[in-house]
Amino acid sequence: MTNSMMNSDNPRAFSFIGGTSGTWTVASQRTVSGDPIGEASSVEMSPGLLADVPAGALWMLRGVATNDRYTTSAEKAALLKRQKPVGRASSSRAALILLRKSPAWWALAQDERRDILEEHSHHIAIGMRYLPAVARRLLHCRDFGTAEPFDFIGFLDYAPGDDDAFDEMLGQLRATREWSFMEREIDIRLEKA
Amino acid sequence: MTNSMMNSDNPRAFSFIGGTSGTWTVASQRTVSGDPIGEASSVEMSPGLLADVPAGALWMLRGVATNDRYTTSAEKAALLKRQKPVGRASSSRAALILLRKSPAWWALAQDERRDILEEHSHHIAIGMRYLPAVARRLLHCRDFGTAEPFDFIGFLDYAPGDDDAFDEMLGQLRATREWSFMEREIDIRLEKA
Image 1: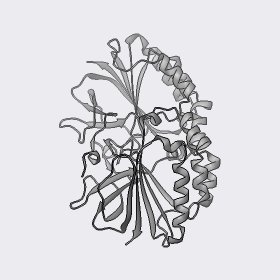
Image 2: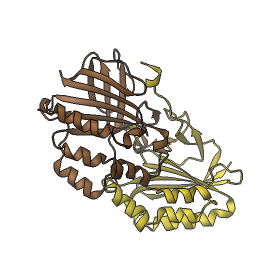
Image 3: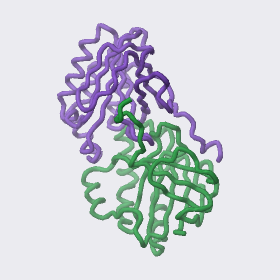
Image 4: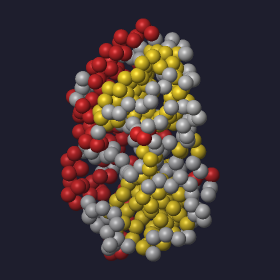
C-alpha cells in the first residue's frame, strides 16, 4: 500500500464531544423534532476526526466542511464580502444546530432542491441579513462512511448582544418550506465557559 | 449513548478490494493522470464499509452512493427511463474508474460547476447515449471522515460486445472541459472471473 493510499485524518473534519467538560457550557437544549440526544453539560469542538466517543463523554458527532451545494457565484461573492469566520474573541455565545432531512428531500433532483432552498425559502438571503453578526461553520455528515445520526451540524457563534437577532434568523428559517423536510432537529445553546 | 447515536454501517457504502482473489479479474490498469496505485490481479466489490485493508490485499477503496449533485428533474426522469442497475448476468465486463478533481474545481460555486459539467461538457447527455448498454454505480469519497485518495469511484459494467461503445463514451468524456479538472485518474478494466 503506497503512502497516497493511506487514510489520514481529513483536514476538513471536525468532531463535537458532549460531556462534562469543554470550552462551551450548555445553556439550553431543545429537541425541535425527532429523537432527542443525551443532555451534556459541556461541549467541545475539536478539529479533526475522533474515531471513538472519548471516555466519560455522552456523545460524539462528526462532520466535514465541503464544497458549496447550492450557492451561485454571485451569492458566494456577496457572502465572502460580508461573512466572518467562527471563533472571534467577542463570540461568547454559540448554537449547535443538529439537522437531519427526510428521504423525500434527498430523492429530489438538484434543481428541485435549489428551488425549495432558495427560490421559495430564501435560505441564503435570510442568512445574509445576519452577517457579519452571526458566523457559521456548516459541516456535512451524510456521506461519512459510517451512518451518522444527522445530515448536518451547524455551529454558529455571535456576541451576547446578538442573541435576539440569532433567534429571529432561526425563526425565519424554521418557517420555510425547506424546513418542512427536517425530520430531526436539535438546538443546543452554548456559552463560553 | 442512545441507539440512534450509534455509528452503524452505511447501507449506501461500498468497499473495493484489490488483491489476488475476487469476483473480477483485472484485464488492464492504466494511470491516466496523477500517481498510480498498486497493480492487483483481482478486484472484489463488497457492499458495506470495511474498516481496514483485508490481510493479503494490496489496496482498499471506499465510497458512498449519494443524492444527485447536478442532475435536473427532467434529466433524472430521462435517465430513470433508460438506465439499468449494475450486476446484470450479461455484464461480464466492467471498468473501475478512480477520479480525483482539483481544488480549483471544488472551489467553484454550484452554478459554475453545473455549467462546466453539463452546459459545456455534456456529461449527462453523453452518458445517456450509452444507456442501457452501460450501467453505472457512482460512489462519492470526498466527504468521508477519513481523507480518501480519490473523490469518486465509478464502477460501470456491460456485455463484452459493448467494449467499443464504452471506450467511445469514455473518450468523449475525457475530451471535455470538465475533465481538465481531473488531477488523478486510474482506469482498471475487469472481466468476470
